[in-house]
Length: 304
Length: 304
Image 1 (tube, rainbow over the protein chains, first blue to last red):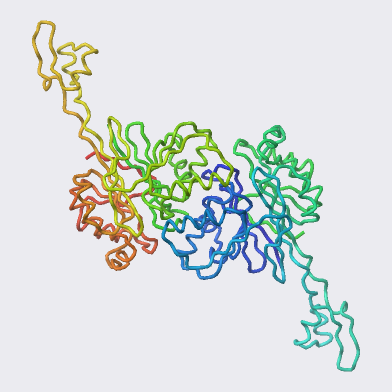
Image 2 (cartoon, each protein chain N blue to C red; image 1 turned 60 degrees about the horizontal axis):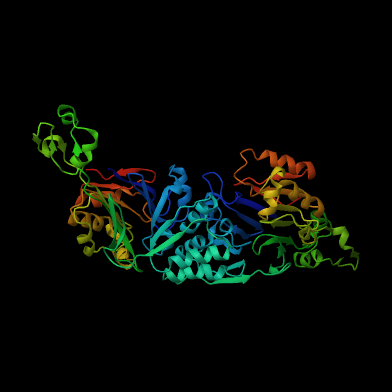
């Protein structure tokens, strides 16, 4: 198992030539999850060689344009490229109407099913399979806004390669052993599971928290998360502005990482007013040392 | 006077890293007119150093995404940058609802007035001042679609600098002379207007025709135009495809230029299927020699 996050866009409200609006790809095994989709996201997907049709689920945090104006274009491109598999869009009430109205006016009948799932409460289960669970995190913004928590499930124990040889374990028994059962040799001798297996890989986790004012209510939902992305629109000197606009400062993002006992913090969504973003990074690091600025085009592992 | 067209985006339906969706800036004196606004247009405006807040009028040809998905983001950016002057948006019925719904869901009260003008008939006057007139051109596409004709008006006659000196024409009389009046010297002698002025600059014109199937009905609206932009989505070998999708081939674009007696033809909106776009240019040039491919980032004069 492996969970990672590729940053497609990490700018705040205004897109520029070198800074794109919020969008990330969360990868887990073969799954591609798109988180937020600012204007131009489809081009950033191309630039980063992400297979557009491989995306099955899109998660939209809220209805401010820098987090979703690229969705209708992405869906349109999926359609024009002949997609047939269903696309699930998880997002706020109202998103469905905005998207469908535009295809209706265009006289377009989509080539695939577009399913909308309204995100409207904390800890809402949005997706689950054998390996991962995705749920909502309540954020505190000017309009309804949710973050997203990606939690890998505990996997199976792993076969110890030496034991495989030593006890000549037949192929058909291995599944049962990785599920925790002991191995019974042909002579009746029982080999305890721990002797022939290794512990499962530690499940990885990722929390996406943008946009939000400082809110300690978030903490209970992301306790002990591996990688935390938390918006840091402002520097400490502009904390009044942060409060007024329901955004966070870099230090308050770090405070949330600390309270949550996160392993690592990524900050982003920094206002264009700061030419030198390292100031914000320093402010965050003073509180939470394991902080990094989320660079566009870089993929971050959730393994620690 | 001077009319010119800056190509911001000239690709067909799918945006890529190096090819942007339909958008152009038509400049006339100090006026900036934006024609179509595909996704990412605001970034192309920045890349080409166009003052976003200088745009007073936007013209949207039709409601296919590659011609308008960037509008809501542009309006949003104008708002976030504190615009106070009115923006006029000329476009199809339905556009207003799409845009306003998104600001409504975002809880945003725009900082400026956004006025929508529904384009719904041929030769509809959309804008007029002392120097220019902008009207609609009926196009033939799968959904309602209009092109736009920019026509400079005949200007005033120009003072002949030599005559200014020779007859010592006082400043306050010059306006009247450029309007066509003769000059009466203090001794009563009348100098005929033609002797002291030059003819006005020839009015320039530009027609934007995208998207459209081949339609000779266009011709009467753009007769003797200076610069004609006409879509050329397909090569001649794919003319069946062009007909089916209500698009044009390069040769049919050239045919329209020829029938209209245009001075020059720009082609674009070429399908991504053609790696070598020079094939289309050659096909057009066989019919209309003064054809050029509209390059993104290049500004074309309408003076001939």
